[in-house]
Image (cartoon, rainbow, N blue to C red; front, side, top):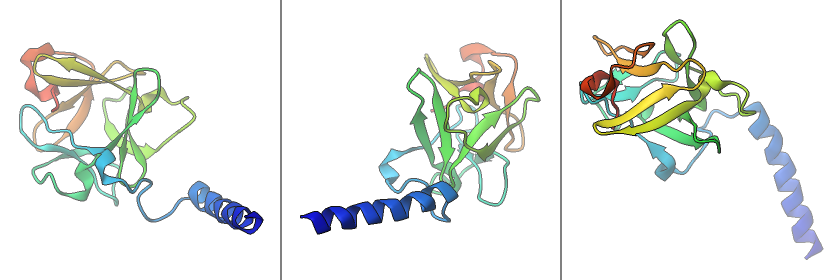
Length: 157
């Protein structure tokens, strides 16, 4: 019994540095935790890839970059975490992109309100109030103007 506890402790203490330092595999392994965000205007999916910080839309819902972990911040807001452990972010420059996540809750630029509307979900950045929007040519950005339910570019399913 005592040997099992020691072995479990040794395993846990060996795993902690790997989690802190990061690993090349996804931060989470349970694929049932992932969501996809499909744009109401184009029908394409919110997407990114490992080699870039850009976010955009893509047509293939099974692509690696279309799966996001909806991380509950416990205060009615969410982190959208990609499969590489980076967070969807939008600062005041209207650019939406991914960057390393801040898990202490201090970075509100990485937090999103998921607001249910009559025509889908509005993703609103907590710090800026900007709305996640799809432009032309697969672009995704944070729009300072909320056009409401009449604008399907700002609705996600």
